[in-house]
Structures are given as C-alpha cells and as structure tokens.
Image (cartoon, rainbow, N blue to C red; front, side, top):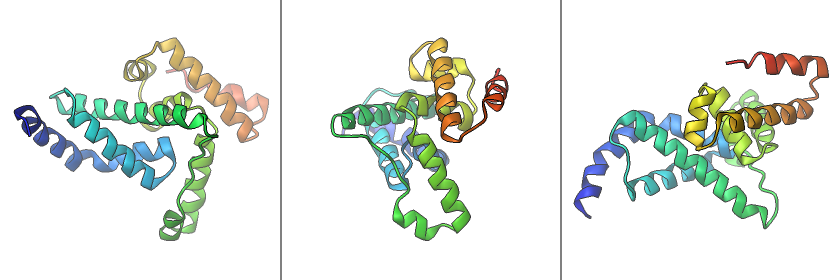
Length: 178
C-alpha cells in the first residue's frame, strides 16, 4: 500500500467509528434496504479511500455522503434500462423489527421509492439531515433553484401518493420556507 493510503486509514477509521450508524441510516433512506445501505456505505468508503479525500473530519463525512448519493443516482440510471428499481425492506428486517416499526419502515421505503433519485436525495438531505437549500445545492453540485424545484416536485408526488387534500398541500409548501 502506498504512503497516501497509509495516511488515509486513520481518517476513515475515525469516521467509521464515530459516524457509521448515521451513514448507514442515511444510506437506508436513500435505498430503502438495510443490506443495500451497508453495501452503499462500504462502496462509498472504498471509493473515498482510493481517491484524494478531505482531511477535515466534517468535510470527509460530507464527501462520503456525496459519494453515497452519487452511487444511488448512478445505480438508478443503470437500472432504468432493465426496469424500474423499487427498494423494499428485506424480509430479514421484518422478522427482526417490532410490528409498528415494520409498518413505518415499509411505508417510508415505499414513499421514497416513488421519487426520482435526485428528488429522493433532496428530500433526505432536507428533511432527514435538516440541511438548508444552499448546503444541499453545494453537496449535490447543482443550483439552489434546482434543489427547490426538486423538493417542490417531490412534495407534489408525495402529496398525491398520500392523498393529501389540495388545501393542505399549500401548508406543506409554506412550512418549508427556510
């Protein structure tokens, strides 16, 4: 192994030790499967380790999260040719969880699966990670207007999916004025 890789191990090790659960939850929300989330985090860390990476721990975590989003988007693009990709909670997860948690996880996975990959990434970053629009734009490498339109479109899809009455839909959009 080269010297650069030797210097990267402590930073990756510290990130995995401190933030692996958060990274897995983040990946789960993007793909809808605990096994897929494990694979996503592992693949992202492998890719990060093989490239130049930030030395600041917070920047490193942001970089890994960006790589996770890129992997999800790339995979979705790849699978579009072969059919629609619908992430579901695995049967193993259902056996291990309590019944209420199963229903919530399946519902969350189904709702997020209804969104396009970029919309899903924006929704997870905005509502799960509670990031402001400007940070999401920087993380995804797009404009703030793009993030806002992705969130708007995602809210419309989610409102239709949940059969939210039209009068209540505007309240959702107004409540997101950050």
